[in-house]
Image (cartoon, rainbow, N blue to C red; front, side, top):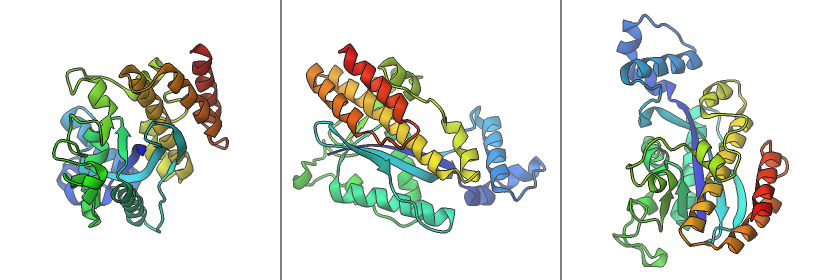
Amino acid sequence: MVMVFDCETIPDVALIKKTFQSEFQSRDIVTQDDLEISKEAQKIQKELSGSEFLPLCYHQVVSIAAVFCDEYGNFKKVGNFSSVGNTKEEQEKSLIKGFLEYLNKHQPKLVSFNGRGFDMPMLLLRAMKYKLSANAYFEVENLQFNKSKWENYRQRYSERFHTDLLDILGNYGATRGLKLDVLANLVGFPGKFDVCGHMVLDLYYKKEYEKINTYCQSDVLNTYGLYLNYELLSGNLSVQEYQNILLHWRDALPQDKAYYRIFFDTITQQIESL
């Protein structure tokens, strides 16, 4: 079983209020608005580091999407883990709990783009906040799932349990600057077409949660497409097998999503070009 996954996050306002006090005071920043607090923290981070990207512990999860496949990469479904609760914290906890419970129970092969550098370490930090268990991720010996000290989720140079496409295609840091959007376009998939990551914060405070979930799904679909091309490149798929997977994937795409037409068309173009 394979699970291609991706997370969308916003700044953790509660943590910012606790730890950015001196930075806010020195700049005479006075606001109680969560969106303004988030953006001011990003501005301060850019002053300090040259990038608005806050450290991992400040990322609050608002969406986790996944493509589920069989062990051969055949598409089964795409969707989001459930978010329930009345507060941001309750909703985040339910998202992470659902993801980790699935991981602990099924122990799928993970596929990501920068999942080792961002998504997994971020999720584990947030899981600690909510006292959740990720025992499968840390397990190093389990005969049922063919785990060993050399083959497990935390082994960077093994792909059996986690294929991080950014890490692998970038030759483990030797090559930098690779972007999912560009690589997806390179191999014939849409990349980002209507929403980008920097828009998630504003969308969240406009309560456009479904738009965030749909965007997160489109990201995992692009990652899935890139993964199939990597499997083709590495000899794990033949061209005929790749074509068959594309045919099934195209037919199984959810037709009620904003990304349906553009993915349908690009997959069709790939099928016809083979």
